[in-house]
Amino acid sequence: MDDLDMALEALKVQIKKEIIDNYFAERVYLEEDNQALEDKVAAYRQEISGVSRLFSAFYAALGQETAVDRIMHLLALTDKPFYEDYQRLSATARKDLLRKYHPRGITSWGRYLNLVLDIYKELTARCGSLREKYNQALAHLRLLNEDIEKFNSSFDFGLIAAQVEAMDGGGEPICGGMLCKEREELSTRMRFKHRKLTDEELPPPPELPPLEKVKGQFKTILRTFAP
Image (cartoon, rainbow, N blue to C red):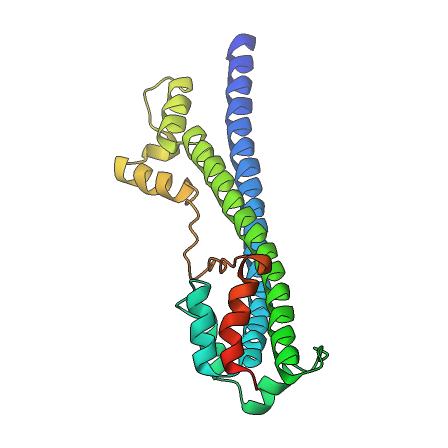
C-alpha cells in the first residue's frame, strides 16, 4: 500500500468516524430535548392539580349542585372540569378549601356573591397561565418533531450504508455481509420515534370568559341561591 492509498484509507476512516460522531451527537441532543419536553409536561400537570383544587373551591363556594349546573352552563363548561375530584371530597375538606378567603360584604348575599366572584377571578388567571404553558408544550412538541424528521432524513441507515460501501469499493456490504432484512431492522432501531402527546398526557385547559363579561349574569343566577 503506497502513501496515497494509506491517505485515502485514513480519510475513509475519518469520514466514517464523523458520521458516527454526528449521529450520536444529534441523538443525544434529541434525547435531551425530549426530556426537556417531558419536564415541561410534568410541570404543566402539576399546575393542573392546582387548578383542579381551585375549581373545587369554586364549586364549594357555589354550594348547591343546581347553582353549579347553572353557572357551568353559562360558562359553556357542561363537562364540569374536575367535578369528580370535588365530589370525592368530604364536607370538611370542602369547607377547608374556603378558609383562606376572607368574607367581604355586609349581607349574606353580598358575602356569597363576593366569595364566588373572588374565586372565579383567581380561576380565570390560573387558567390563562395554564393555557400559556399548554401552548408552549405544543410548540415544543412541534419543533421537536421537526428536528426528529430532519434527524431521520439525515441519518437514514440505508443511505449511510450505501455511501460507506461505495467508499470501500462497492464490492462487499458492510458489517461482514449484512443482509437486507438486517439492514432494515437496524435502520428502524436507529430512527428516532416521533413524539406524541394525547389529551390524557396533556389535558387541554378549560376556557373561561373574563369576569367582566359574565359578572352581571353571575349576579342574576346566584341571587336565586343566596343563603
